[in-house]
Amino acid sequence: MSFGARPRGRGAAALCIMRAMRSGVAFLVVIILAGCGGEPQAPQQTASPSPTAPQKAPDEPAALAAIAEVNSGQMDYFDRNRRYALTYDEMIEMLFLKEEPAIEKTGYDIRLRPAADAASYVILAVPSTPSPEVRHFFSDQTGTIRAEQGKDANAQSPAISQ
Image (cartoon, rainbow, N blue to C red; front, side, top):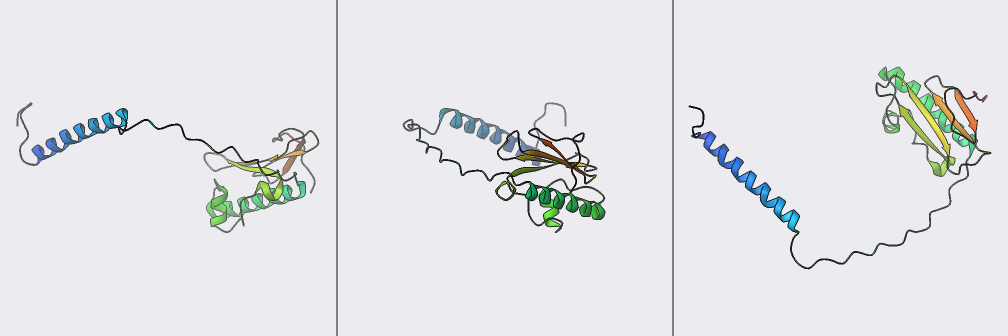
């Protein structure tokens, strides 16, 4: 077959299919851009946002217990899988964690931040209602929990005694 010659047999069928797909795609784009016809619709009314439920006050003992439970789950997960879990769901599926820590129970947003290679992780606990009097928590694969009052905790924050 020479360059520029028309394909025959299966190749001809494939060429027809490709042309039909191109024209079909072009038709679809025209329909999308032009709309589906009919009269323009009036903007829909959105419901006014409902008042948010009051946040649970930060409960330090509950947050510390949740962080300790996540640390323990991560240690068990590491022992079995030679890496840390990337999500709470991974630990829950393997039964190393009962449930994901919830703001409604602890008054803290407890976030798991694993490293991309799953060789380490960080846990950050931020109070649901920040104030200068409330402590923020930090932990990592060392299992040490650290705290700062009124600001985000990090690896250099003072360790707390439990």
